[in-house]
Length: 256
Image (cartoon, rainbow, N blue to C red; front, side, top):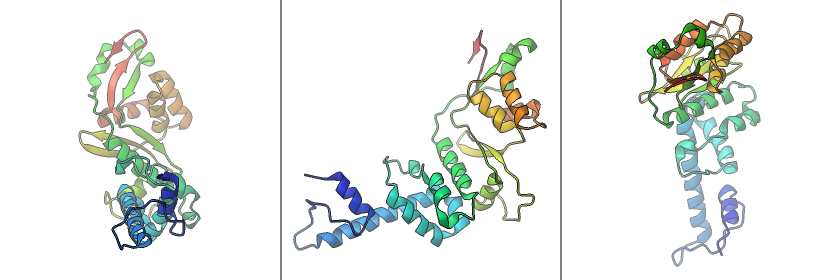
């Protein structure tokens, strides 16, 4: 009988017992053949992880990433045959991985890369333009809710994550970062391109409130609470420029 658990253990650990009932051609060494198979599987997963987290790999260097990925892969085999999904737990792994403890921003860069991958594969939904607001009177705007595109993810970091990602993804030239300040990002897909926008103070809280179903009044209050310089006009301009609003909704009347 095939023992899947024993097979996985043997894949992860070279010193684990050889799985039972392996079939090899006559005269072949089962231990050697399985070792070749194991190495191919591990190498393929490390390569997939490197493609999914190319900026993270650029930050630490290929050799270090290879060794770090080897540790991750042996503890986290894929749960899906879609390799673009592989590495969902990688940011959390980086937070606890002692050799990168002096790079606390690394996990947030990995989260940004993960969000970009999800955005690329998110569903296609038609977007609305600002003219959709003309159907609402000024006294009804406070109760207005906005549905954001499925590709939208809002991330906040204590580190200049967007700037670091851009420098290591070929989006901008490497340079010193001064001042070193936290950044928030809106990750979304526009047509077939994944975009990363660095948000102004308070915009992340504003957008998260909208994404959770809050109306403009609640979202503006969340933005102002997060930053005293929050501007709802600027936040709306950011959303309109990104073209990520898919519906304007009111509790009395839906404008889809």
